[in-house]
Length: 488
Image (cartoon, rainbow, N blue to C red; front, side):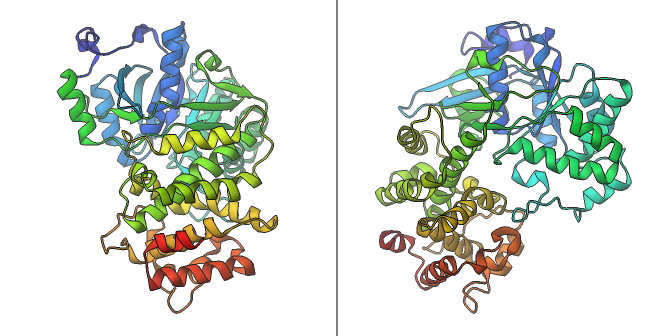
Protein backbone atom coordinates (compact mmCIF):
# COMPACT_ATOMS: atom_id res chain seq x y z
CA UNK A 1 0.00 0.00 0.00
CA UNK A 2 1.33 3.43 -0.93
CA UNK A 3 1.90 5.47 2.23
CA UNK A 4 4.73 7.04 4.19
CA UNK A 5 5.41 3.92 6.25
CA UNK A 6 6.19 1.86 3.13
CA UNK A 7 8.31 4.37 1.20
CA UNK A 8 11.63 2.70 1.97
CA UNK A 9 10.39 -0.57 0.53
CA UNK A 10 8.73 1.08 -2.47
CA UNK A 11 11.93 3.00 -3.27
CA UNK A 12 13.64 -0.31 -4.10
CA UNK A 13 11.31 -0.57 -7.11
CA UNK A 14 10.58 2.97 -8.35
CA UNK A 15 11.76 6.50 -7.48
CA UNK A 16 10.20 8.02 -4.35
CA UNK A 17 10.57 11.52 -2.84
CA UNK A 18 14.11 12.16 -1.61
CA UNK A 19 13.21 15.44 0.12
CA UNK A 20 11.93 15.61 3.69
CA UNK A 21 8.16 15.74 3.26
CA UNK A 22 7.70 16.36 6.99
CA UNK A 23 9.49 19.70 6.66
CA UNK A 24 7.08 20.99 3.97
CA UNK A 25 4.69 23.82 4.78
CA UNK A 26 1.58 24.60 2.74
CA UNK A 27 2.47 27.53 0.49
CA UNK A 28 0.03 26.70 -2.29
CA UNK A 29 -3.61 25.80 -1.93
CA UNK A 30 -4.96 24.09 -5.04
CA UNK A 31 -8.67 23.83 -5.87
CA UNK A 32 -9.61 20.96 -8.17
CA UNK A 33 -7.21 18.06 -7.61
CA UNK A 34 -7.79 16.06 -10.77
CA UNK A 35 -5.42 14.08 -12.93
CA UNK A 36 -4.14 17.14 -14.75
CA UNK A 37 -3.09 19.01 -11.62
CA UNK A 38 -1.29 15.92 -10.35
CA UNK A 39 0.51 15.38 -13.68
CA UNK A 40 1.40 19.04 -14.12
CA UNK A 41 1.59 21.65 -11.33
CA UNK A 42 2.08 19.12 -8.52
CA UNK A 43 4.71 17.35 -10.66
CA UNK A 44 6.64 20.58 -11.31
CA UNK A 45 6.45 21.37 -7.59
CA UNK A 46 7.79 17.90 -6.77
CA UNK A 47 10.68 18.42 -9.22
CA UNK A 48 11.55 21.72 -7.53
CA UNK A 49 11.47 20.11 -4.09
CA UNK A 50 13.76 17.35 -5.37
CA UNK A 51 16.18 19.89 -6.86
CA UNK A 52 16.59 22.18 -3.85
CA UNK A 53 15.10 23.24 -0.55
CA UNK A 54 11.61 24.47 -1.42
CA UNK A 55 10.01 23.52 1.87
CA UNK A 56 7.67 26.54 1.92
CA UNK A 57 5.87 25.32 -1.22
CA UNK A 58 3.95 22.23 -0.14
CA UNK A 59 0.49 21.86 -1.68
CA UNK A 60 -2.83 21.50 0.11
CA UNK A 61 -5.50 20.11 -2.19
CA UNK A 62 -9.02 21.48 -1.91
CA UNK A 63 -12.32 19.88 -2.93
CA UNK A 64 -15.40 22.09 -3.03
CA UNK A 65 -17.86 19.47 -4.31
CA UNK A 66 -19.25 16.31 -2.81
CA UNK A 67 -17.74 14.45 -5.76
CA UNK A 68 -14.26 15.30 -4.42
CA UNK A 69 -14.76 13.01 -1.44
CA UNK A 70 -13.19 10.00 -3.22
CA UNK A 71 -9.90 11.65 -4.16
CA UNK A 72 -9.75 13.22 -0.68
CA UNK A 73 -10.16 9.84 1.03
CA UNK A 74 -7.60 8.11 -1.17
CA UNK A 75 -4.96 10.81 -0.84
CA UNK A 76 -5.49 10.95 2.92
CA UNK A 77 -4.85 7.19 3.11
CA UNK A 78 -1.77 7.59 0.91
CA UNK A 79 -0.42 10.61 2.84
CA UNK A 80 -0.98 12.79 -0.23
CA UNK A 81 1.22 10.63 -2.45
CA UNK A 82 0.40 8.98 -5.78
CA UNK A 83 2.19 7.35 -8.67
CA UNK A 84 2.77 9.26 -11.90
CA UNK A 85 2.93 6.84 -14.84
CA UNK A 86 4.56 8.45 -17.90
CA UNK A 87 3.85 6.52 -21.10
CA UNK A 88 6.25 7.08 -24.00
CA UNK A 89 5.32 6.53 -27.67
CA UNK A 90 7.91 3.74 -27.97
CA UNK A 91 6.20 1.73 -25.20
CA UNK A 92 8.59 2.68 -22.42
CA UNK A 93 6.91 3.47 -19.11
CA UNK A 94 8.46 5.59 -16.35
CA UNK A 95 6.79 5.56 -12.93
CA UNK A 96 7.59 7.62 -9.85
CA UNK A 97 5.98 8.58 -6.56
CA UNK A 98 5.04 12.28 -6.31
CA UNK A 99 5.22 13.86 -2.87
CA UNK A 100 4.38 17.55 -3.23
CA UNK A 101 0.77 17.30 -1.95
CA UNK A 102 0.87 17.18 1.84
CA UNK A 103 -2.76 17.81 2.80
CA UNK A 104 -6.30 17.79 1.40
CA UNK A 105 -9.35 19.57 2.77
CA UNK A 106 -13.02 19.41 1.76
CA UNK A 107 -15.16 22.52 1.76
CA UNK A 108 -18.63 21.42 0.70
CA UNK A 109 -19.86 20.74 4.24
CA UNK A 110 -17.10 22.42 6.31
CA UNK A 111 -16.30 25.66 4.48
CA UNK A 112 -14.47 27.21 7.45
CA UNK A 113 -11.71 24.60 7.14
CA UNK A 114 -10.95 25.70 3.58
CA UNK A 115 -11.32 29.41 4.30
CA UNK A 116 -8.88 29.09 7.20
CA UNK A 117 -6.35 27.26 5.02
CA UNK A 118 -6.55 29.91 2.29
CA UNK A 119 -6.24 32.63 4.91
CA UNK A 120 -3.28 30.99 6.70
CA UNK A 121 -0.15 33.20 6.81
CA UNK A 122 1.90 30.52 5.00
CA UNK A 123 -0.47 30.41 2.01
CA UNK A 124 0.94 32.55 -0.81
CA UNK A 125 -0.85 31.12 -3.86
CA UNK A 126 -4.34 29.75 -4.47
CA UNK A 127 -4.27 27.88 -7.76
CA UNK A 128 -7.18 26.53 -9.78
CA UNK A 129 -8.06 23.72 -12.15
CA UNK A 130 -11.84 24.00 -11.93
CA UNK A 131 -12.56 23.39 -15.67
CA UNK A 132 -14.02 25.95 -18.05
CA UNK A 133 -17.48 25.55 -16.51
CA UNK A 134 -16.24 26.40 -13.02
CA UNK A 135 -15.71 30.06 -13.93
CA UNK A 136 -19.49 30.63 -14.08
CA UNK A 137 -19.67 32.85 -17.14
CA UNK A 138 -21.81 32.83 -20.25
CA UNK A 139 -19.51 31.39 -22.97
CA UNK A 140 -20.97 33.64 -25.70
CA UNK A 141 -21.10 36.96 -23.83
CA UNK A 142 -18.40 36.36 -21.22
CA UNK A 143 -20.70 37.81 -18.56
CA UNK A 144 -20.88 36.46 -15.02
CA UNK A 145 -23.93 34.26 -14.33
CA UNK A 146 -25.71 35.73 -11.32
CA UNK A 147 -28.65 33.36 -11.85
CA UNK A 148 -26.62 30.45 -10.47
CA UNK A 149 -28.38 29.36 -7.27
CA UNK A 150 -25.09 28.87 -5.41
CA UNK A 151 -23.99 32.40 -6.34
CA UNK A 152 -27.30 33.79 -5.08
CA UNK A 153 -26.79 31.89 -1.83
CA UNK A 154 -23.26 33.29 -1.40
CA UNK A 155 -24.37 36.87 -1.93
CA UNK A 156 -26.85 36.45 0.91
CA UNK A 157 -24.60 34.26 3.10
CA UNK A 158 -20.95 35.29 2.58
CA UNK A 159 -19.76 33.08 5.43
CA UNK A 160 -21.26 29.95 3.85
CA UNK A 161 -19.59 29.78 0.42
CA UNK A 162 -20.42 27.21 -2.25
CA UNK A 163 -18.38 28.26 -5.30
CA UNK A 164 -14.77 29.29 -5.79
CA UNK A 165 -15.83 32.95 -5.70
CA UNK A 166 -17.43 32.68 -2.28
CA UNK A 167 -14.38 30.90 -0.87
CA UNK A 168 -11.90 33.35 -2.37
CA UNK A 169 -13.73 36.45 -1.13
CA UNK A 170 -14.19 34.98 2.35
CA UNK A 171 -10.49 34.07 2.59
CA UNK A 172 -9.25 37.39 1.17
CA UNK A 173 -11.49 39.28 3.59
CA UNK A 174 -10.11 37.30 6.51
CA UNK A 175 -6.51 37.98 5.44
CA UNK A 176 -7.28 41.67 5.03
CA UNK A 177 -8.76 41.88 8.54
CA UNK A 178 -5.70 40.09 9.95
CA UNK A 179 -3.31 42.40 8.10
CA UNK A 180 -1.83 39.58 5.98
CA UNK A 181 -0.65 40.19 2.40
CA UNK A 182 -2.95 39.02 -0.36
CA UNK A 183 -2.30 35.67 -2.01
CA UNK A 184 -1.98 35.21 -5.77
CA UNK A 185 -4.90 33.57 -7.63
CA UNK A 186 -3.26 31.37 -10.28
CA UNK A 187 -5.55 29.79 -12.87
CA UNK A 188 -4.18 26.67 -14.57
CA UNK A 189 -7.29 26.05 -16.69
CA UNK A 190 -7.56 25.85 -20.46
CA UNK A 191 -9.16 29.25 -20.89
CA UNK A 192 -7.56 31.94 -22.98
CA UNK A 193 -6.38 34.77 -20.69
CA UNK A 194 -7.25 32.52 -17.74
CA UNK A 195 -5.85 34.92 -15.15
CA UNK A 196 -7.74 37.86 -16.65
CA UNK A 197 -10.95 35.81 -16.68
CA UNK A 198 -10.48 34.74 -13.05
CA UNK A 199 -9.89 38.37 -12.08
CA UNK A 200 -12.87 39.73 -13.97
CA UNK A 201 -15.26 37.08 -12.63
CA UNK A 202 -14.05 37.43 -9.03
CA UNK A 203 -14.29 41.22 -9.14
CA UNK A 204 -17.76 41.10 -10.68
CA UNK A 205 -18.90 38.80 -7.88
CA UNK A 206 -17.11 40.74 -5.15
CA UNK A 207 -18.60 44.08 -6.22
CA UNK A 208 -22.08 42.64 -5.64
CA UNK A 209 -21.11 41.12 -2.31
CA UNK A 210 -18.78 43.77 -0.80
CA UNK A 211 -17.61 46.80 -2.82
CA UNK A 212 -14.87 47.73 -0.38
CA UNK A 213 -13.42 44.21 -0.59
CA UNK A 214 -13.64 44.32 -4.39
CA UNK A 215 -11.53 47.48 -4.43
CA UNK A 216 -8.95 45.77 -2.21
CA UNK A 217 -8.86 42.70 -4.50
CA UNK A 218 -8.37 44.86 -7.58
CA UNK A 219 -5.44 46.64 -5.96
CA UNK A 220 -3.70 43.84 -4.07
CA UNK A 221 -4.42 40.43 -5.66
CA UNK A 222 -2.41 39.23 -8.68
CA UNK A 223 -3.94 36.97 -11.33
CA UNK A 224 -1.14 35.75 -13.62
CA UNK A 225 -2.16 34.33 -16.98
CA UNK A 226 -0.70 30.93 -17.72
CA UNK A 227 -0.56 28.35 -20.48
CA UNK A 228 -0.48 24.73 -19.34
CA UNK A 229 -0.04 21.59 -21.42
CA UNK A 230 0.17 17.87 -20.77
CA UNK A 231 -2.17 15.21 -22.09
CA UNK A 232 -3.54 13.35 -19.07
CA UNK A 233 -6.08 10.60 -19.78
CA UNK A 234 -8.53 9.30 -17.19
CA UNK A 235 -6.94 6.69 -14.93
CA UNK A 236 -8.15 3.18 -15.73
CA UNK A 237 -8.29 -0.03 -13.72
CA UNK A 238 -5.58 -1.33 -16.06
CA UNK A 239 -3.25 1.43 -14.79
CA UNK A 240 -3.93 0.44 -11.19
CA UNK A 241 -3.39 -3.23 -12.07
CA UNK A 242 -0.13 -2.41 -13.88
CA UNK A 243 1.44 -1.00 -10.72
CA UNK A 244 0.29 -3.93 -8.61
CA UNK A 245 1.39 -6.57 -11.12
CA UNK A 246 4.71 -4.91 -11.97
CA UNK A 247 5.83 -3.55 -8.61
CA UNK A 248 3.46 -5.07 -6.06
CA UNK A 249 2.39 -1.47 -5.38
CA UNK A 250 -1.18 -0.72 -4.41
CA UNK A 251 -2.05 2.84 -5.43
CA UNK A 252 -5.79 3.46 -5.53
CA UNK A 253 -5.59 6.46 -7.88
CA UNK A 254 -2.40 6.83 -9.91
CA UNK A 255 -2.15 9.30 -12.81
CA UNK A 256 -1.05 8.53 -16.36
CA UNK A 257 0.31 11.09 -18.81
CA UNK A 258 2.46 11.67 -21.86
CA UNK A 259 6.14 12.67 -21.55
CA UNK A 260 5.55 16.15 -23.02
CA UNK A 261 4.96 18.93 -20.48
CA UNK A 262 4.86 22.73 -20.78
CA UNK A 263 3.99 25.66 -18.53
CA UNK A 264 4.30 29.32 -19.53
CA UNK A 265 3.37 31.83 -16.80
CA UNK A 266 3.13 35.60 -16.63
CA UNK A 267 5.55 36.69 -13.90
CA UNK A 268 2.96 38.55 -11.83
CA UNK A 269 2.61 37.39 -8.21
CA UNK A 270 1.30 39.17 -5.11
CA UNK A 271 3.27 37.42 -2.41
CA UNK A 272 6.23 35.46 -3.79
CA UNK A 273 6.35 32.36 -5.96
CA UNK A 274 8.29 29.09 -6.35
CA UNK A 275 11.39 29.23 -8.52
CA UNK A 276 9.76 27.05 -11.14
CA UNK A 277 12.12 28.32 -13.81
CA UNK A 278 14.70 25.98 -12.27
CA UNK A 279 12.63 22.99 -13.43
CA UNK A 280 11.73 24.16 -16.93
CA UNK A 281 8.78 26.52 -16.45
CA UNK A 282 8.93 29.59 -18.69
CA UNK A 283 8.14 32.98 -17.12
CA UNK A 284 7.23 35.66 -19.68
CA UNK A 285 5.80 39.20 -19.64
CA UNK A 286 2.85 38.23 -21.86
CA UNK A 287 1.42 34.70 -22.10
CA UNK A 288 -1.46 35.50 -24.44
CA UNK A 289 0.13 34.55 -27.79
CA UNK A 290 1.24 31.20 -26.32
CA UNK A 291 -2.19 30.56 -24.80
CA UNK A 292 -3.88 31.24 -28.10
CA UNK A 293 -1.50 28.94 -29.97
CA UNK A 294 -2.15 26.08 -27.59
CA UNK A 295 -5.92 26.54 -27.37
CA UNK A 296 -6.47 26.96 -31.11
CA UNK A 297 -4.13 24.14 -32.14
CA UNK A 298 -3.97 21.53 -29.37
CA UNK A 299 -7.34 21.97 -27.67
CA UNK A 300 -9.31 22.71 -30.83
CA UNK A 301 -7.41 19.93 -32.63
CA UNK A 302 -8.41 17.51 -29.88
CA UNK A 303 -12.06 18.50 -30.35
CA UNK A 304 -11.82 18.10 -34.13
CA UNK A 305 -10.62 14.53 -33.66
CA UNK A 306 -12.95 13.86 -30.73
CA UNK A 307 -16.29 14.96 -32.23
CA UNK A 308 -15.63 13.54 -35.70
CA UNK A 309 -14.08 10.42 -34.18
CA UNK A 310 -17.12 9.88 -31.97
CA UNK A 311 -19.47 9.94 -34.98
CA UNK A 312 -17.21 7.59 -36.93
CA UNK A 313 -16.82 5.20 -33.99
CA UNK A 314 -13.14 5.62 -33.12
CA UNK A 315 -12.80 4.93 -29.35
CA UNK A 316 -9.57 6.85 -28.69
CA UNK A 317 -7.59 9.80 -30.02
CA UNK A 318 -4.68 7.59 -31.07
CA UNK A 319 -7.16 5.43 -33.02
CA UNK A 320 -8.18 8.58 -34.90
CA UNK A 321 -4.50 9.22 -35.64
CA UNK A 322 -4.10 5.70 -37.05
CA UNK A 323 -6.66 6.72 -39.68
CA UNK A 324 -4.93 8.60 -42.52
CA UNK A 325 -8.03 10.61 -43.39
CA UNK A 326 -8.31 11.94 -39.83
CA UNK A 327 -4.61 12.88 -39.83
CA UNK A 328 -4.98 14.74 -43.14
CA UNK A 329 -8.14 16.50 -41.96
CA UNK A 330 -6.59 17.55 -38.64
CA UNK A 331 -3.53 19.00 -40.38
CA UNK A 332 -5.71 20.86 -42.89
CA UNK A 333 -7.68 22.40 -40.03
CA UNK A 334 -4.50 23.42 -38.21
CA UNK A 335 -2.77 24.81 -41.32
CA UNK A 336 -5.69 26.52 -43.08
CA UNK A 337 -7.95 27.67 -40.24
CA UNK A 338 -6.07 27.79 -36.93
CA UNK A 339 -2.61 29.00 -37.94
CA UNK A 340 -3.67 32.10 -39.95
CA UNK A 341 -5.43 33.68 -36.96
CA UNK A 342 -2.61 33.21 -34.43
CA UNK A 343 -0.62 36.14 -33.06
CA UNK A 344 3.10 36.71 -33.56
CA UNK A 345 5.01 34.08 -31.56
CA UNK A 346 8.60 34.71 -30.53
CA UNK A 347 10.81 31.63 -30.50
CA UNK A 348 8.15 29.21 -31.75
CA UNK A 349 8.46 27.12 -34.91
CA UNK A 350 4.79 26.55 -35.69
CA UNK A 351 5.43 23.80 -38.20
CA UNK A 352 7.50 21.89 -35.64
CA UNK A 353 4.85 22.56 -32.96
CA UNK A 354 2.08 21.13 -35.17
CA UNK A 355 4.26 18.13 -36.02
CA UNK A 356 4.75 17.52 -32.29
CA UNK A 357 1.00 17.69 -31.69
CA UNK A 358 0.42 14.99 -34.27
CA UNK A 359 3.06 12.81 -32.60
CA UNK A 360 1.51 13.37 -29.19
CA UNK A 361 -2.05 12.64 -30.36
CA UNK A 362 -0.78 9.45 -32.01
CA UNK A 363 0.96 8.10 -28.86
CA UNK A 364 -0.39 4.50 -28.80
CA UNK A 365 0.23 4.11 -25.09
CA UNK A 366 -1.85 7.08 -23.96
CA UNK A 367 -5.19 5.89 -25.41
CA UNK A 368 -7.01 9.07 -24.49
CA UNK A 369 -10.70 8.28 -24.86
CA UNK A 370 -12.79 10.21 -27.36
CA UNK A 371 -15.51 10.49 -24.70
CA UNK A 372 -13.12 12.37 -22.36
CA UNK A 373 -12.10 14.78 -25.09
CA UNK A 374 -15.76 15.40 -26.00
CA UNK A 375 -16.86 15.85 -22.38
CA UNK A 376 -18.18 19.33 -21.51
CA UNK A 377 -17.92 20.42 -25.14
CA UNK A 378 -20.38 23.23 -24.41
CA UNK A 379 -17.75 24.82 -22.16
CA UNK A 380 -14.82 24.11 -24.50
CA UNK A 381 -15.91 24.68 -28.08
CA UNK A 382 -16.88 28.37 -27.75
CA UNK A 383 -13.31 29.14 -26.65
CA UNK A 384 -11.38 26.67 -28.80
CA UNK A 385 -13.29 26.22 -32.05
CA UNK A 386 -16.19 28.66 -32.40
CA UNK A 387 -13.79 31.54 -31.73
CA UNK A 388 -11.65 30.30 -34.62
CA UNK A 389 -14.68 30.31 -36.93
CA UNK A 390 -15.54 33.86 -35.83
CA UNK A 391 -11.97 35.05 -36.43
CA UNK A 392 -11.89 33.51 -39.90
CA UNK A 393 -15.25 35.01 -40.78
CA UNK A 394 -13.85 38.42 -39.86
CA UNK A 395 -10.72 37.79 -41.95
CA UNK A 396 -12.38 36.08 -44.93
CA UNK A 397 -10.53 32.87 -44.02
CA UNK A 398 -11.52 29.22 -44.41
CA UNK A 399 -14.22 27.90 -42.03
CA UNK A 400 -15.26 24.61 -43.65
CA UNK A 401 -13.19 22.23 -41.51
CA UNK A 402 -14.35 23.68 -38.18
CA UNK A 403 -17.95 24.04 -39.42
CA UNK A 404 -18.16 20.30 -40.13
CA UNK A 405 -17.18 19.69 -36.49
CA UNK A 406 -20.06 21.93 -35.33
CA UNK A 407 -22.48 20.08 -37.61
CA UNK A 408 -21.20 16.76 -36.25
CA UNK A 409 -21.61 18.08 -32.70
CA UNK A 410 -25.26 18.76 -33.47
CA UNK A 411 -25.83 15.19 -34.70
CA UNK A 412 -23.85 13.85 -31.71
CA UNK A 413 -25.98 15.89 -29.28
CA UNK A 414 -29.24 14.87 -30.93
CA UNK A 415 -28.78 11.18 -31.70
CA UNK A 416 -26.14 10.11 -29.18
CA UNK A 417 -25.00 7.35 -31.55
CA UNK A 418 -22.17 6.80 -34.01
CA UNK A 419 -22.64 5.98 -37.71
CA UNK A 420 -23.05 2.29 -36.84
CA UNK A 421 -25.81 2.93 -34.31
CA UNK A 422 -23.66 2.36 -31.23
CA UNK A 423 -24.48 4.65 -28.30
CA UNK A 424 -22.06 7.46 -27.41
CA UNK A 425 -21.40 8.39 -23.77
CA UNK A 426 -22.19 12.12 -23.63
CA UNK A 427 -20.89 14.04 -20.60
CA UNK A 428 -21.97 17.67 -20.61
CA UNK A 429 -23.61 19.99 -18.09
CA UNK A 430 -25.76 21.34 -20.96
CA UNK A 431 -26.63 17.90 -22.34
CA UNK A 432 -30.41 18.33 -22.11
CA UNK A 433 -30.36 21.81 -23.67
CA UNK A 434 -28.03 20.66 -26.45
CA UNK A 435 -30.25 17.68 -27.22
CA UNK A 436 -33.41 19.78 -27.23
CA UNK A 437 -31.93 22.28 -29.70
CA UNK A 438 -30.35 19.63 -31.91
CA UNK A 439 -33.55 17.55 -32.05
CA UNK A 440 -35.26 20.32 -34.04
CA UNK A 441 -32.65 20.17 -36.82
CA UNK A 442 -34.66 18.14 -39.33
CA UNK A 443 -37.46 20.74 -39.32
CA UNK A 444 -35.09 23.71 -38.86
CA UNK A 445 -31.51 23.07 -40.07
CA UNK A 446 -30.23 26.05 -38.06
CA UNK A 447 -31.96 25.15 -34.77
CA UNK A 448 -28.76 24.02 -33.03
CA UNK A 449 -26.82 27.21 -33.73
CA UNK A 450 -29.65 29.42 -32.51
CA UNK A 451 -28.27 28.89 -28.99
CA UNK A 452 -26.86 32.36 -28.52
CA UNK A 453 -25.11 31.48 -25.25
CA UNK A 454 -22.84 29.13 -27.23
CA UNK A 455 -22.71 30.52 -30.75
CA UNK A 456 -23.12 34.25 -30.21
CA UNK A 457 -24.15 35.93 -33.47
CA UNK A 458 -23.09 33.13 -35.84
CA UNK A 459 -26.76 32.69 -36.81
CA UNK A 460 -26.47 36.08 -38.57
CA UNK A 461 -23.35 35.11 -40.56
CA UNK A 462 -24.64 34.08 -44.00
CA UNK A 463 -21.41 32.33 -45.08
CA UNK A 464 -21.37 30.21 -41.94
CA UNK A 465 -25.09 29.35 -41.97
CA UNK A 466 -24.92 28.36 -45.65
CA UNK A 467 -22.03 25.94 -45.11
CA UNK A 468 -23.37 24.66 -41.79
CA UNK A 469 -26.90 24.06 -43.13
CA UNK A 470 -25.55 22.07 -46.05
CA UNK A 471 -23.24 19.94 -43.87
CA UNK A 472 -25.72 19.23 -41.08
CA UNK A 473 -28.38 18.08 -43.53
CA UNK A 474 -25.88 15.77 -45.21
CA UNK A 475 -24.89 14.24 -41.85
CA UNK A 476 -28.52 13.58 -40.96
CA UNK A 477 -29.05 11.99 -44.38
CA UNK A 478 -25.94 9.81 -44.04
CA UNK A 479 -23.84 9.90 -40.81
CA UNK A 480 -20.81 8.36 -42.53
CA UNK A 481 -18.63 11.30 -41.49
CA UNK A 482 -15.70 10.20 -43.63
CA UNK A 483 -17.62 10.89 -46.85
CA UNK A 484 -17.99 14.53 -45.83
CA UNK A 485 -14.38 14.76 -44.64
CA UNK A 486 -13.23 13.59 -48.08
CA UNK A 487 -15.49 16.08 -49.87
CA UNK A 488 -14.02 19.00 -47.94
